[in-house]
Amino acid sequence: MTYTNLQSCLIDLEKNGHLIRIKEEVDPDLEMAAIHLRVFSKGGPAILFEKVKGSNYKAVSNLFGTLERSKFMFRDTLSVMQELVQLRNSPMDALKKPLRYISTGLAAYKALPKKSSFSSGNFKEIKITNLPLIKHWPMDGGAFVTLPQVYTEDIDKPGVMASNLGMYRVQLNGNDYETNKEIGLHYQIHRGIGVHQNKTNKKNIPLKVSVFVGGPPAHTLAAVMPLPEGISELTFAGALGGKRFRYTYKDGFCISLDADFVITGEVHPNENKPEGPFGDHLGYYSLKHPFPVMRVHKVYAKENAIWPFTVVGRPPQEDTAFGALIHEISGSAIPNEIPGVKEIHAVDAAGVHPLLLAVGSERYTPYLKNKRPAELLTQANRILGTGQLSLAKYLFISADETKEINCHDIRGFLKHVFERIDLNRDLHFHTKTTIDTLDYSGDEINEGSKLVLAAYGDKIRDLSMALPNVLAECDFISHPFFLMEGVIAVTLNSYTNSKNAKEEIKILSLWIEERIDHFKGIVQIVIYNDFEFTSSTKNLNDYLWVTYTRSNPSNDIYGVFEFIENKHWGCRGPMIIDARKKPHHAPELKVAKETEEKIARFFEKGGVLEKWA
Image: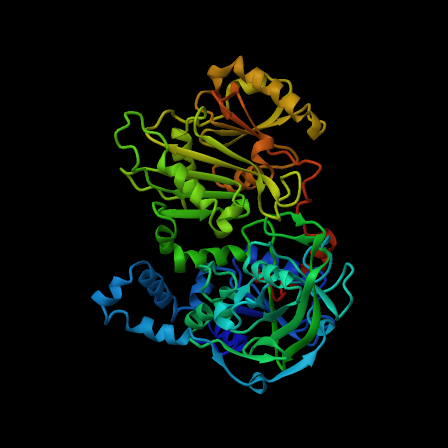
């Protein structure tokens, strides 16, 4: 479906039962976000808030809340985009089957951005305080833009075709920002905008930034699409939306003429202010840290503009559907981006970046009698050096040339790895390196470690399907829990603080060593606290979230019969992961009880959201 703007999209969604309106005034301070969270959790529709307290503009959330709705919005162009990806992977197909790919030629034309006059945008100038200032979580430092399209250009290659359009969160008020004059930008230096800023910093000139909000939904998706460097996101937006991206320049700033709102401004060299806290997609707060401050130049809005937003938190959330849609479009591109790698899955339930699963190939050593990871290790290094994949903290990688492995079947894939992994040999650490800025499991911001778990070859063990009975005899272990085949969780009663962790786990290891026969088929033991697991047979998400968001591999992994040989660490018994909450960890996200009570009226009998109570 070709949408000329956000309004035409919402009309289409409502007509087809994908949108509901809330006509009663709602407070953007926590209430709108809490409503969104409840409706999303029930698989509900997009929500149009018609009266936002303190603003004259409507707001909409949960647009991309289900894969079904996302595919519905792009029903006329999705297959064409998949063909474009396929052509990039196999360009000879266009020559072999020219009639089949006629539509991709039309899409390529629509991918070309179109320059028009500023007057055609029908904007009026407003202030930051006129916007829907939505605060999402109780400890948030202020109101944030959560679906921005942040536009910058390369100072050495000016123009839209070498530009970057990214989704980097924007803090609109709070902290030390001067109201209506300053806003905060949160992004990591390796992102496209960071590269652009580095160049302007070296020339000691400000970076011009435009923040677009709203417009056709293809524009929003383009901002999160992991495109190869050098390919403009504006071209993707045009091709997916079936309509050329319209733009112009005003006062030297690029303006998206189909956006609902545009904020322009400059980031000056070495000018930072505290940004955050903010409830983030790992399920915890990212805390207050210095990030670039943007001096606001002008703010524009259309007459009937609508403010799109989402709420991020412990997955799954709306951004889960973003990931699923991206995979629908570009999943087939992975083998061409990283030779030998068949597929990669960034596990949403673990916060995306903390945990990657990958299927690779083994072709290097066919003459070996005992199969072992070889080419997989080369591919693992390539994965950890590629774009956003470089933020991964744990990477499980395997290959099997005799049957298909699907890393999107998380439980089945982990079971395959755990049946084959040799804990003496197959754990490969990268220490004192960079991790996701939002991950607080390391000792410092953006600093931590990585672990590659590479498994290949014949099955070497049968995984245990139950808790070892001997756990009941241990007086310093409580709340043992079976998580999945070969994986159990325990709480240590002696836990006092993280400083004693090594001593406590050493006691646990020695206790297991003396009873090792009872732990046959156990590959991984997770130590946890302050968490209540749900049924492991129905919900794998708890294991994935607790284990991989709350641990830093180099600091928190131990082993039964552990050893170091030629600087390689391994263990001859189960590996132990200390996934307890520690003092330096960020707080987890929780909706305030008072907020739940305030929004209850919408979900009561006769309320507009009764169906999603």
